[in-house]
Amino acid sequence: MRLLFDALTPKQARIASLLRLEGGLDLAITCREYYHVKDMLDRYAVEYRCIGKYGETPYEKLVEGLRRQLELAELVKGLDGVLSFPSPDAVRVAFGLGKKSVVLNDTPHAYHANSLTIPLSEYLIAPAAIPEDAWRPYCPKRVATFDGLFEYMWVSRHRPNIETVRGLGLEPGRYVVFRPEEAKAAYYRWNNAELRRKLVDLVRELGYTVVNVPRYDDQIIEGAINLTKAVDHLDLAYYAAAVITGGMTMATEAALLGTPALSYFPETLYVDTYLKDKGAPLHRCRDVDGCAAELKRALDEGRKPAVRLEDPIKLIVDIAYAVF
Image 1: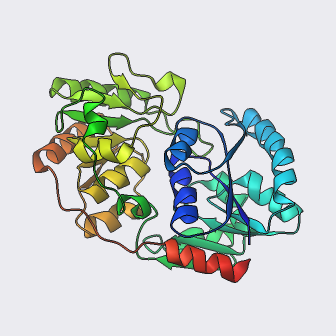
Image 2 (image 1 turned 135 degrees about the vertical axis):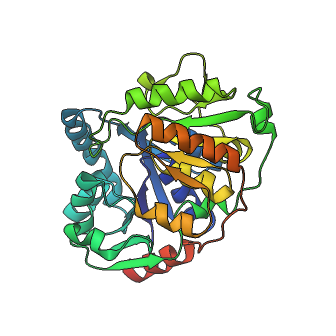
């Protein structure tokens, strides 16, 4: 059994790598040109093939996706199916070739990608923290859940290395990691640029160094340490005073490690309540005043013990063998 895993983000690159290295699955891993994805795959030293690039506008997303599908078709025709996070390109190709797909997912709000993948897949594998009703608009055939989060796959295996932060000239506890919002994703309909700038100013006013992990060239922050090539983000998060993100992955990673995490993604997510119930230091805010108060509260509270959850690797591997 040989499957395609189309890794479109650094998070997905980690999942693909661990399913191959820890789960023992035979995966043909692909990616696209997007900040930190190839860097992350290189860190795990797995073979991969980078096909196409990320489209920023709706037109570019369509055209670049069609170009990728042509190349993916040549690859997938010799494989047994697709196991991946929602990749419209990979799932469309598998469907057209009469092959099955299994989708991993924790973002029911990603309407466009979910609509193009979940209905065509045999299985949806998701955290139990997300109720099945949240997936109902996408008509999944079968849903399998686990009592954990995908991020736990790598957070639970992490052993902190202080040399990562020392190599950047950073002092543990004296910097804040910043990850801007996924502003050009199809589902992202908000403009948080001003909130982002004011949060950065606040971090500096509080006396912390800003370490920025941008998603796009226009998210570079003047005067900050901008990481356009990936280092181990878990080391950064572990030794940071706090992690601030406009998305969720790096906030989840930090909270699982016990580092105070603040997300200014404009909607409440099911994962929020789940992590807080587990005792993880996750904070959420939506405006400047609220974010300022939450950040100061998070910094005052400091670190908490790491959280223990269910590792989903076995479930994913078992379903892969059952389906393919």
